[in-house]
Image 1 (spheres, helix red, strand yellow):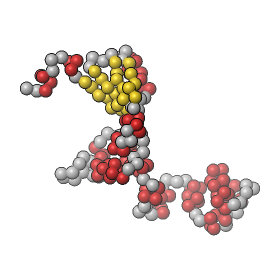
Image 2 (image 1 turned 90 degrees about the vertical axis):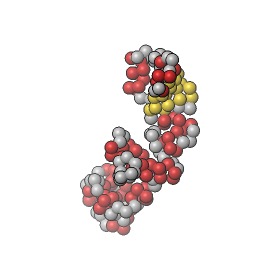
Image 3 (image 1 turned 45 degrees about the horizontal axis):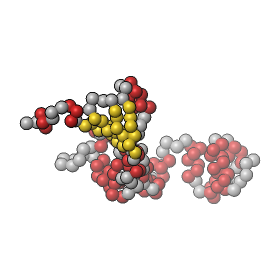
Image 4 (image 1 turned 45 degrees about the vertical axis):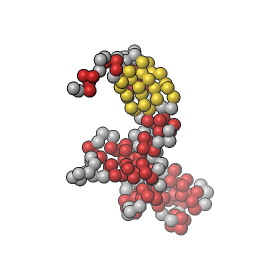
Length: 180
């Protein structure tokens, strides 16, 4: 006998909706269906008005309230602990025979990878990259900020004035030269 056959009524079913955050779209859809959200605290809620008993779990809030680093992986919060980062690294490795799923086959893989990167110190994120790789994608004027202060001192004011204001200001602060 299937588990569903053991239910005497559909009212015995409970649904759980897990979301990273409560969005305008979710609020609008609840409103369109004449359902209401009763906040239960700590990132949990109950959705009233649906056919089935329905609960809501907001991972952004639950991860903070319960200090759950593994749940942070599925939220917009940074992953703080090494155990959760290690688990995520193991999960997102390319699939090999007998290993976990290839992360590129998963929906939301870019967000998960970005979250992992964001949780690492900048030194770890840049480790192993060549200087060219670190500067890739930066406009030439911003690449100047990678130069030493000694080299930047050698640029004439006329050249500095030709740079975007943000770059000029950063260089002038570093070399102690006031705006001309």
